[in-house]
Image (cartoon, rainbow, N blue to C red; front, side):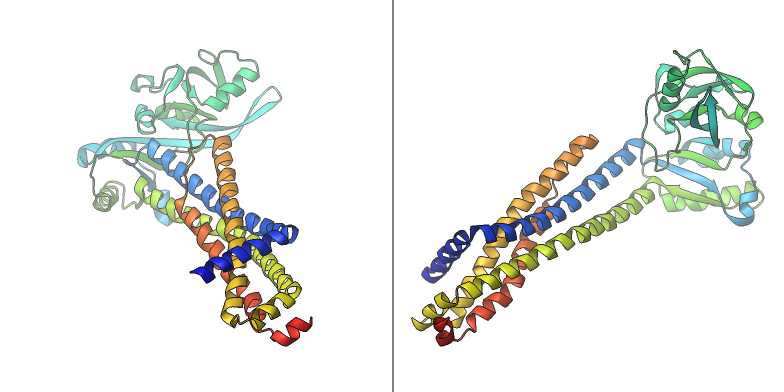
Length: 392
């Protein structure tokens, strides 16, 4: 124990004596560990935020799409869709929709407009709310009215329509009365893209007016504790019987969450691998510093060997120096990397998640780098011939 304490004291004395060189080696480790911690932590934050947003949309939703190949040519029939909740009680409500996109001009200004034909259930399933005006209802069937997304409403305000609600939106030579403006909403997952820049008209109106009027996607809310795999089989069989053998593709929110978790894990590993490149460079820097230290302290090594120090004592001393250097750099890197991840979360207005796995990884990797990169210099020092070392 006394010898170990002496080695630690000697290691600190040696590192402090060569402060400038130690600092340069330290910077490499700080950048390396900091990069790994920041990358892994940011990956964790992105994963948690993506899953949170997805769950906010609801995990009790499934999408039903037309199958591929010949099945894709068989459109969904409105009457078959309407009877689905009656035939399959696990399905609480359905929201078929049609959509098509294109550029919309107002004067010289342009926005990529998403035209959607929806039912009243579309808003409840997607948890959409109106900040002004109202949402569409079943009473709006066949009327030329619409609800606009937040981005489209902002575009209209900037280009001559100061108050969208009550105004007119002309698309494909048809004028729609705007009855409501949607609150900004997250997109992705099972929720259709483009809602924020969308014009949402009644489905019956859209089927008469849109260029693409076939229903190819249905959103459905299912009852709690529904067995999704069993539901898939029953719904597939239902459409096969009711729609001339049509095949459907059914995706649940839980399936997408699991896929997302796997993708984010791969993303975090990739980011960690990128950060590891800087760590390898830092480790090489530590090895170079330790080799220079061995060269400069040949006389000291020779004197200690002449006074009775064993090879293991010399090797332990230099190995401890390397580990201390890497641990100090690792500690600073952990603080720095965590700070970068915290700043990223604040700028993104996301919840900061402390990745304890990343912190433990930082300490573990720092120790391993110290041992690995210090072993060769320490072994070189322990094998020096005492007489030749004293002569130097």
